[in-house]
Length: 123
Image 1 (cartoon, rainbow, N blue to C red):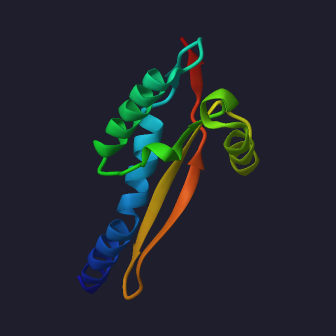
Image 2: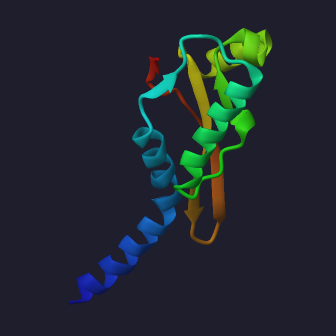
């Protein structure tokens, strides 16, 4: 009986600590594969694409700024950002910087960015 009384609060703290990070990872992998158009983005289609991605992540209580959704096309985001993102994240056509948050008891929240490179299909 005493073991159960110790295990339940421990499980609650572990769940509370990792829930935001698990929610971010679940949001990322439920949207794959991401469909990119075969032709190049213009400004309006790029904005609509990022709004759709942002809406998906917000349904998981995760705010991802539109500037954190980067396509590896120098014509859309500029050559410097495209190169920097490829160096930081590896090869890919789309990069999303997701905030992973851990809530640590007695310390507070710790947040770091994870560069997610989704599987992409060309439509």
